[in-house]
Length: 547
Image (cartoon, rainbow, N blue to C red; front, side, top):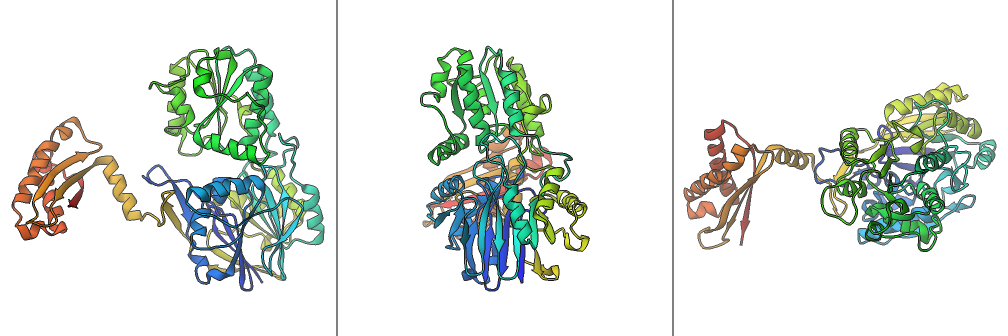
């Protein structure tokens, strides 16, 4: 029996990680992150809980990556700290994976694969990468053969008939595999609610050419840092317009460098210049490709729109194109940034005013159905999406001829068994979300996140430095600082510090040797002052340092 267990990605967009298990062997397809919510302060990424793999670590034989997006490979450093297994991927995917591992101070056994060549990951697992079109170079789906069942994993895909790099989703090969027999199709559900076909990336190329014609100011295109196909056609367009190109934003610069090293991005010599050099050129000779389409703080576009001193700032007559959809939750910040650009006299174009400036990298309903009809799976499980996407994709599979009993909606943690009789539920695996810093070795607890939120909204931090020996003499402080305070509350911090100091004086030398008693005294002194002045009890975080 082949077992299929999603550790993430079914019920949310991101965190993609799928365990395949046959006998005593396991293979993990993708190892992605989820990006944090705004209230998860100090968190860089959310990674899957890998507890389900820890019962017998030797059973995990390989990780196979479908493409280079963070929601498919970003958790690799966390996994490889525990599991020393080979990682298979295409050239650009491995280039980005290697960079992530180096950032974490790790090395890995990275093994290159390419479309059309089968490879053996273990005794039970033979795989073949199948070329698919997506919004990042070198994306693939996977054909997986085990002694008891065969499946196809679509990866993230679309059926673009005129992709920028000329690499179409290989329906011909998928059709051959379908004729040979596919027991299960796991397929990308991201755009399952969208009828028809996702427009081609060539539409964006044509839209840019039309919008850029006759612009006398600088042109800025804000996009995701991983969308290198879009970078490629912007570079070619800049050449025809006689403009020099600036890449702005750390992730974009890094991805472009990695793509160039593996031959997935071509930039003619002398075309790339720095922001400093661009500031000295006539404005009609500059095209800037930038991160910041989600209005992220400190992104390339945020700096260009800033009023702070810098080598180059956008001016009246410049054109800014935001070439990305708004990720849910980011709309207010994007609106603020757009208004800020308008206030500077910049012309702004967004997908809501000009739909052709961005297209998705994921298949819509008719493309999804075409894949199902090509592969002809006996069973079907939708993956990569929220529950509403999964349910809609399941209906499409049934419409395409999959038996209702063999088309199942699973959620992260569900264990499915596949045999000659179809799919069966085998219970649940331990799953969860681990909020982490990029450099972290352990997840941050929900209690810590809640405390950070309270501090950020209306909290006070009280710090005192006390001698380790010598009767607990106070060397410095108490010092009180806070966030989210009114002017009157801010003015009262000195009085609050004096209140905390009085409470410390009440303690005996022995008590000042006990950190918990010192923290209680600090908190009591500050709360007493705020209660007397304002009738409130702020959230407090006392810190005792000993030297």
